Image (tube, rainbow, N blue to C red; front, side):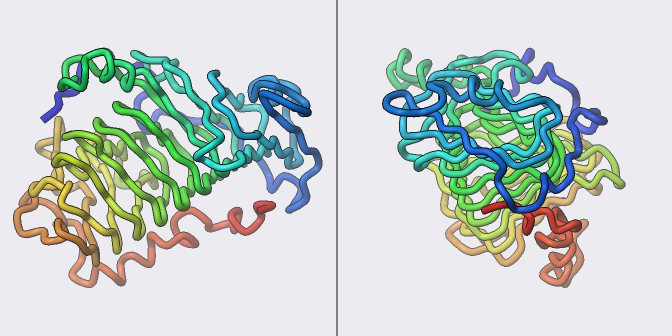
Length: 336
């Protein structure tokens, strides 16, 4: 089991984000008001993604699309909290890759940071190469004692959506910080707490890849009234070594896998209470109508599912897209 090392999460604690992001309106409907192009070669407005973002005015309230041509963009990309209504569209996640090797601090290491509401990303890979470089340097030896937090992305803003994107890292790959988020057909790769935070998020038809023993989620719900939680609908959990589905980063941690294909990569215990050993009755950890070689929950942690009613499938209605993250219909207003 991989231990959680000292200096890692120096950003704000889960549930303490307050008004960190600007709640935008509907960005003027489904019309895109401006198009900006980025390419490393050939005709384009800019050669870097950050330069394109920097030209968008503060308090932007109309959709702006930044089209990013194929290429390896070695840069940190930051969308500030006062620049909502931005669409980043790559040429394909296999060919449009944003990568950087920041590490150590969760609040500074992310390759991609999105702080405002109303941000959409499509067909892009967000990668943090730091720990991958460490693996190569150590000639593929075990790196449990060498890996550091190295985020591929952190997402603060409400009403944020990611379609056909990939998030690649090792430790703390995706910081799903807060707000309502939708991930569709995404691939998320890592080993240690590689989806963590206090977001109110649905991961639909996503491929979750654990590259070594560790923990997929570290969800930080802090109270019974906290609306956050990670819902995995369909999709597949895959890996080469046994991984836990999650460990608690808050006393009311909430993670549900629903109709998900759980391959042999899932550790029999499945879940770990971590530093909240006296709060297991407050967790919402569940596997509902899952399939695959690890779908049998006979050997799961004894306290798992105790907060789930007998008719669990019916309970899932409160965690549907419309009920859990799309109460105001924002997904239908995206100019897709």
